Amino acid sequence: MKPPSGLVLLDKPEGLTSFQALGALKKALDLRQVGHLGTLDRFASGLLPALVGSSTRLAFLFEDADKAYRAVFQLGRSTATLDPEGEIVSEAPVPSLERIQQALECFRGRIQQTPPEYSAVHVGGQRAYQLARAGRKPELQPREVTIHRIEVLRFEPPELELAIDCSKGTYVRALARDLGRLAGSCAYVSRLARLRVGDFRLEEAVAPQDFQAATHLFPPARFLPRLAGVAMLSLDPGRRAEVLNGRPFSEDWCLSPPRQDGLYAVLDGEGGLLAVVWRSGGRYEYRAVIPEGR
Image (cartoon, rainbow, N blue to C red; front, side, top):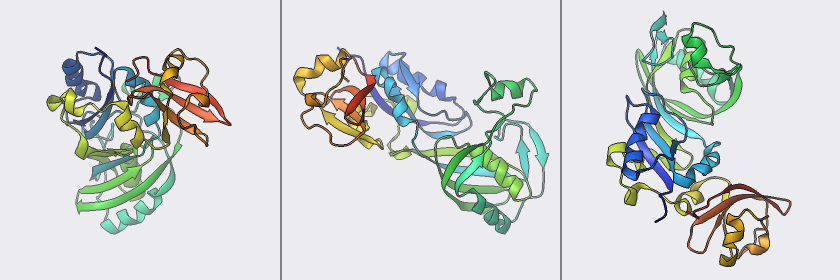
């Protein structure tokens, strides 16, 4: 019997770390090879995609996925961690909705964002949060992120609820920090829910305790077509062993050879995933090989 492999969409509850949320999967599948895609802070909830078994080799395919959040900012106060778990470090008057709306204009499109001091960003070989906890101020550099959408859903002072669609690498806690400052105040994220990762949505997710492999484990052939920038490629069944053995890939092995460059998932005749290859100028490079073909 082949070990389980595929994608699980978890609905992580508040109060659990992302690692703890995987515990139910590992127990149900009797498998340690389980990894989440994009950490959610303990205070946050929502969509936490996880890869299982040999599919963990496909984590790189999710790295560039956009994300969507619903966030509640607590205005007029800020905490050391920019979330409800940190101690309050500053207070200021709550800004008006008009001033908030004016400030929001500066956060649409491509922006420069400095990660929070309490983040997993590497600084000189250490995580920023490790330095911050040790009382040292990490020297963090701004980086470009894209805010596709940031809109006010509710304003009931001191709470501001926002809908946020953003690129990879965006810290919602940093958005709260920067919005508060630009509006002449301060803020932290009091609640956060992730609603979407790429094409995968929270409505499809299952609570960790309700997970059932037969229903909630999506095989690669089911979730790969939903990934942006990944096309499907059907292999001649007689070439299966050559792919699994890592022989130089040839488009002559394909039932319908591709005609343009890009990333391709190579499927066998039964819909099992054998490999992911990159085509450039008619030449191929393996990005992942799946030994079990699933």
